Image (cartoon, rainbow, N blue to C red; front, side, top):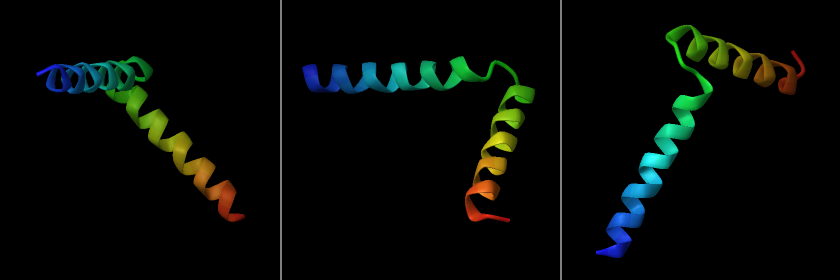
Length: 45
């Protein structure tokens, strides 16, 4: 029972952490765009 509760708590904390970084759809788009730039730079193109 405690493992199930800990798993649920971990899932909730992960979701809260993910939502804390981008409060709007625009924020999600900016995060994805910046991630794409990082990938482009890492490939050298």
